[in-house]
Length: 296
Image (cartoon, rainbow, N blue to C red; front, top):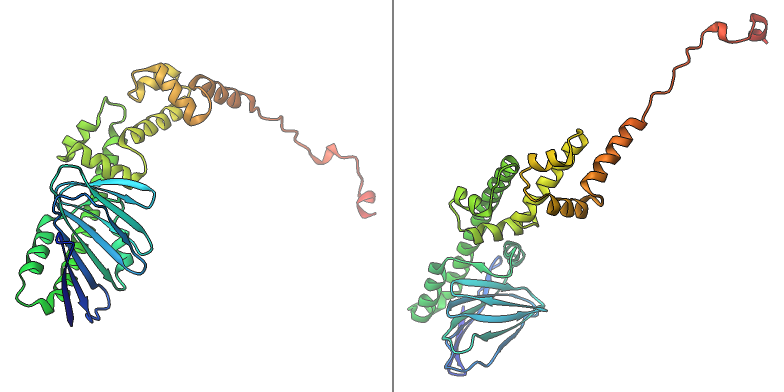
């Protein structure tokens, strides 16, 4: 395997890997950025390969396609083939980051793990990458080392996603079972022993709704079921743990298109308007026919 190392603008070091020929994850280039005080943007145009960016110190803002994000220390994001990314350091702060470009059949598997643009990742993996690449006594083997570290990162992120689903499922079950109580996001985070911002973020990514919006949806749906069972609006509101009737009515109308009162009235009218039609029992005597007519 050939290796090429060069310094870029005295603030970055590039390590280019040649002829690794690894099928699944094949490292192509590692760029280590330690800026010398400038805030010149770093623009990347990726045509064929995936690039993983990691911030090891400071904060960075980046423009990815049409959206803008901020990456903090210990976080990373993935730029997929064909996308364009521009990074800027946050003014007056020291920052350090790396960009690892790789190819291979496993690119799509990696991209599938990034359900969010920015992910928290194990600092230990990237600390080892930086230290090994800068101080390795076997530079010709760095490509294989990086491939192994990327697989290690993939395993960590996929295991974490499994945990995401477990905790999100527990949060949903808790809401489904306790919607009639005065529960809060803080209560759920304490029950799970997790940071409220963290569980809120993974819940929204997995469910598609914030915990607050999901809780409201459950309460409104349960209230609608009670209204179908001839509960009054007041009784239904109390039963689902809602304290503000006016706000409840507003949210109910947004979801169902009618107010709770109109919804209840429509159900009542629909129920009473369905009357059984009298059954006319017809016997042979009701018909005017004779055996002769039958034969004809």
